[in-house]
Length: 341
Ligand SMILES: Cc1ncc(COP(=O)(O)O)c(C=O)c1O
Image 1 (cartoon, rainbow, N blue to C red):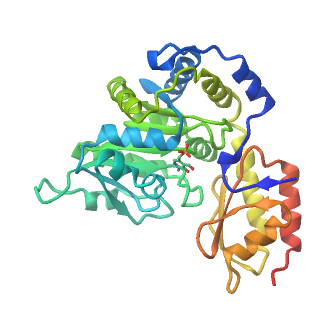
Image 2: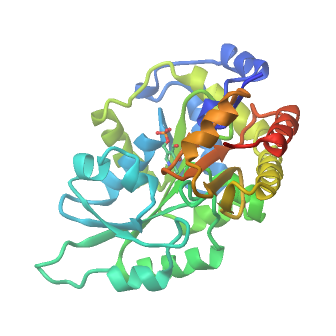
Image 3: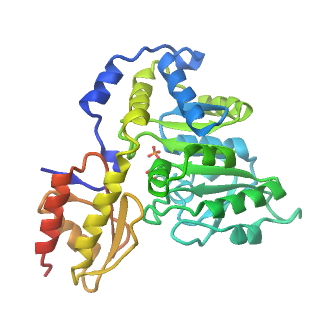
């Protein structure tokens, strides 16, 4: 029995999802003729009340395409310094868009309007032109933290005043929606572009959607082609996305509960120094000296429980649909009995 908490990207499609994929109607999507992709894109756009959507192979691609469409070379993008777009996309903002980043020190991956206001450059030829604000919800490196929606509204007002685009890396937006009770339409009204991942907690093997206005997505399709992301009979993958949107959203609450249960077990152990408050499906904790993250990871591995270090002393566990209640019960018992030397 392997319990793989390294990421929610490790999920494998269920039999029901595979059946939906097997039965998919397909066509050439570069010609706009894949009925399953067209259906998924329409479904995503309708859910968020946005004009249209585009299916891509990955969340990195939807983020990078959005940034490319929002900016020109030499422009500046404001985001939290823990943002995926900044630290985990291979320098893609510089490589793909020739833009630079103004990283802000936020609170567990979340920034405020006051911070953004401070860093919007004046119209001065010495300065890069501030063009885009990019938020992440939930924030991965913030331990699955959720934005307060009022903070997003305030950032939006600022963007409108200064003519800035507002992009959301919503790789795990559905986790935030399930945790807070907010709706996709609230987000669709505010953001100029939203990236959502289908291949994390929603459990598909591949795929992300980029949502936005018709003109924006028309340009995004040109960029996707240039990035080599135009796919042909990818409706088999879109069918998994349709299945996930219809069946796998509400169940994310179970992952959140599992993360809290394991956090409770860890809080009883003297070798755990601190636990980042659990809001969704990500659990980050820090080991007490002299124990390193690797010592704990190796000890859990002996019990077939896999997780990742995010620093010398911190560990991340991500809960998802392949982590079943009996695995969580087993983990709690392993942690309760664990002694580190
Ligand atoms: C917050 C966030 N954004 C974007 C991505 C990128 O998604 P992908 O792995 O599909 O490129 C990830 C992946 O883990 C992520 O955690």
